[in-house]
Image (cartoon, helix red, strand yellow):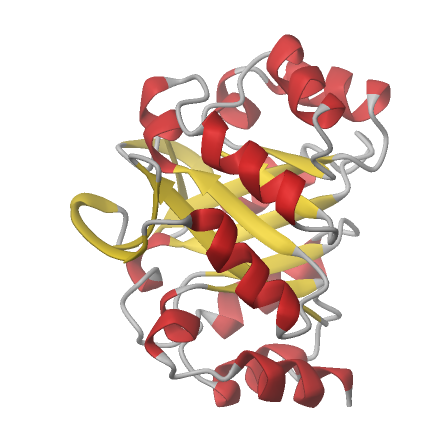
Amino acid sequence: MILYPAIDLKDGQAVRLVKGEMDQATVFNDDPAAQAMAFVEAGCEWLHLVDLNGAFAGEPVNAAPVEAILKATKVPAQLGGGIRDMATIERWLDKGLARVILGTVAVENPDLVREAAKTFPGHVAVGIDARNGRVATKGWAEETDVMVTDLAKSFEDAGVAAIIYTDINRDGAMQGPNVDATADLAHAVSIPVIASGGVSSLDDLIALRDCGAALNGAISGRALYDGAIDLKEALAALNN
């Protein structure tokens, strides 16, 4: 199971939010590329990047720090936030991004997801963010009536590389991930599932690894910054 260190970008800085609230941002590093390098030097195999401003704006806002990260590091990175058309997808992949994450458009324009996954096989993931089982869009600001499993199943034949499932109520709250809901989703679809939201200890990572479903990986942010999870120790444990 892959551990994806998260770098959430707001106003050019690496921050963490609590439950997606932009006014509850804690700045952890004003040099996101340096933060990325620290994760890479600790041994991470992937990076998970989020353009928080972009998620609200509907277009890339933190392009400069993302590009700096891509130039500074050699490990593959995935990015979500404000990616809502083919031109933006192509631009990011041309700049060296390994995978784009499509969230809002997965609900509003699923045909775009299918087109992108077909055009760029292996490079398109779907981000499904949910409160109480229902999908939220536009930086989690808008809730829909779409159920998580229904949305995930609708992309079974699309060729998407992964589904990144975030339980918003757990995100940044250091209360542990929603292991049962994540496992249920992974059992419901054949698409690889990455867990996100609430991973706050090594025990949480082990619980996800041993949840009975073959998860692709888990994303952790605040716990790595706070020191609640030692990245080297966690990577060693998951590799065992």
